[in-house]
Image (cartoon, rainbow over all chains, first blue to last red; front, side):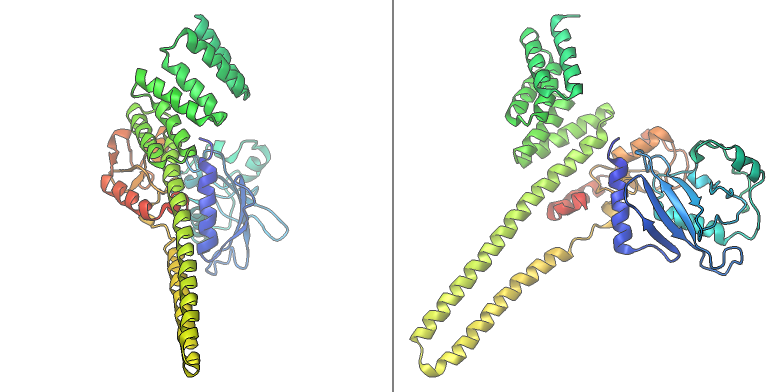
Length: 155
Length: 269
């Protein structure tokens, strides 16, 4: 299925360039059809995320959007990893939407960013996932291969 | 293994390596031994496509279709060869036939053939658009020349006192003519927005063969089949969804076709 991802991403990009993204979401770079970077911030005054901007990395396989993109937060000097019970301190996100089961090909870069934005907006717990330290130390798997439990739907 | 089969396999090996000249020669040798084998014609046609030997591709595919009239590959290659020769109606006709056979046989090449249908429509429209533009600008030039000629004639045969008035009148006419053509060009550019209803939410491509799910949402057939082969769920609701739940959305298909007739650029927006 060569060309599937390239064409779709090309069209997503031209849509982004002509319609611009929703508030709080900004495209940082999309130099190729394998890796894009975006910045997001929450729009309300949730004290956990006040005045912070977070950097997201999207990695696309040739099967995108049939297969989900790999989406992680990236740590930079001015871009921390947001605190959240579903975000590990190495930037890996546990969100069913991004998993093999929960992904749908009608999702796109913009809709994923919006989901993450609202995931942060709705959170009030100042904590990492259970076992964060151990996970960050021991995990060698790609995010898509990790078997998360999506049992806690309250956060 | 028969001698012709050996030659064919050797041809395939050379094709894989990108040596299309050698592959074509080997398929030809195989065909001398086994002239009623349709696969040898389509294999040679594929090698000839790579060599841009369009007329020979057409000959091979025609030979193949005489043996097996419903040969998917033959129609697909014919479409490509006719397109290269700018024979748009034939190119589209064979692309449609290939698409129909592909859907019926559930062949894996549906995405490629769907793209070929769109490509035929796009290139046909591009070609006609170029011609329209050329004709319009020629017409504009001709009208301007005529007006200027008439202006000169009128000025020659007129009295001294009328000349200023006449010049003004003609200059206005010329400006007006230019404006009319310019407005027509602007209008052409303005209508270039793809309607959302014609765009597939999975590929973001213009729909060729939309199918509708139980929820009432339509997708490009090749795209939703690709999704269902990975996950048998409705992309919107995540409810179970099977191949057999899909129905052709013929009204939408016709609407898409109609839109493309007038707006061929949308095939690759």
